[in-house]
Length: 92
Image (cartoon, rainbow, N blue to C red; front, side):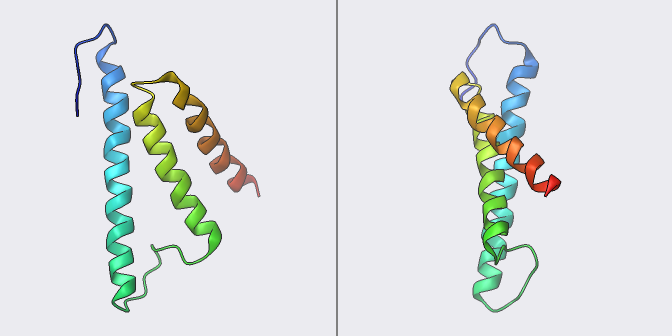
């Protein structure tokens, strides 16, 4: 991950690296549960309905937009929309 020297504090780089690790963890869980599901092992992690798949997509969008905010502030819109999605789902 390219971390060039900038005037941003160390917390700024830790913020993006946190979302990078979140993305890696989510993708590993999703890929392993998909492979297990293809081999016939039913697990409760892999989303089977539309709402579960949308939750995983929004979690991936949240992590990628949190990572991309380090490079372009425009991705704050995607970050806020994914966060609002999770708040509204909990209210439903």
